[in-house]
Length: 271
Image 1: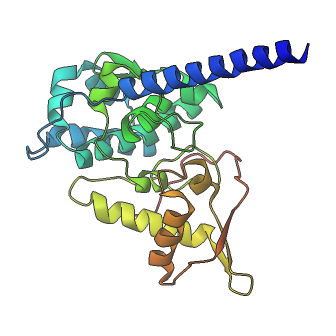
Image 2: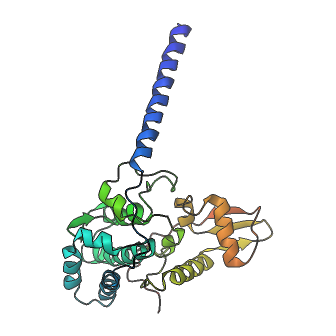
């Protein structure tokens, strides 16, 4: 009887291992990059300006119908060709994400979780969700529940061609999901993007972080925990926080604040 049980368990374990190998193999194949863009070409600044004007219209409660139509009528080839590098991709899609969240939460009365997963955003003849923008395009098709350690298998060729080449953890300080604990909304510009993201990250983490010198511990935003691989794990978090606070946090433990999901729309940073 015991021998039969052992054989049965061996078969089960082998089956699980085979499924795991197949799962990882398929995942690897699905994340192979498509043809890379020529990152040296200048972007289409009309596209980037359009994203900023769209967000500004959302903020000022102006009619956004014109900008929605302009975005919908873009051709996909021109969109791909115009967003020639990661900086352009981030500028365009961060502005659209922040604008569209306000629209979906306000005009469309959508809430979690459907506000993130519903494909309500029409760009260049294709429907996208907020999750598509954040996790597929800006985070290079990461599976949202894996803390950034696993890819989303089979994201589709379109999303792969639109995605950044390299994940930039600073986007997490720029995307606003309408909650009290979210970063403030800003208008991102191509020429200033790096400095703007640095400022956003510094301001956000200074507000969200407390340091206990006596116990050598840090409390900071839950966002770093949700996307810990994007930040390089806890070692990377210590380095990032050390750079902001001008301190060596080697040996410090890191804890995360509860996330406050209270709805706070139109939470723009003062320019």
